[in-house]
Length: 203
Figure 1 (cartoon, rainbow, N blue to C red):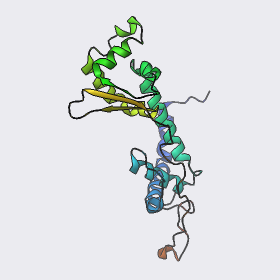
Figure 2 (cartoon, rainbow, N blue to C red):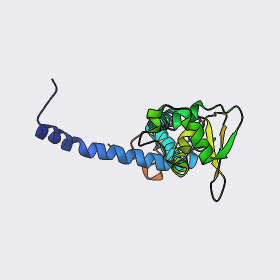
Figure 3 (cartoon, rainbow, N blue to C red):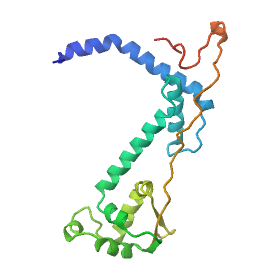
Figure 4 (cartoon, one colour):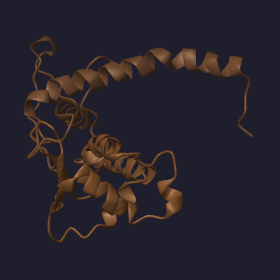
């Protein structure tokens, strides 16, 4: 019931576009002002991105920990999608890893083949040889690690593979310093221009 012509939609968007852009600049400026006070107990992958995200959270007055929570949920969803799309992930996750598994890629391929049905082994996505399996494992290793399975290759020829379980722990602390003293701007006669107060670049 809320449909409207495209021309009307874009006319409305153009009218508020300056405010949208100004809001984005406010967020970036506030995040940059907070970068030096962000403290994470542990840094995840894409550490700079995580630090900037927490700084932005502080600038916009979001609840403490909300950025890291969303970030970890997105990463978890991406890992789950990657594992579900891989034919070798399911048997790998079902392996008994009460003790470490150590062997060649050929040994592992034979083990995995014994755990799946013939129709799965005949699918194009199933590794055709040990070399193909090794390539798949290297790509899937970060996703498997998120599920608690560590894949290690011996160097430099990568002929032997070690598979073991890793005790799951939080990849990153959900706590970060989210309070900072108000900044006083001499140009504004000492008025508080800390993020979350007045707009940094106007609205």
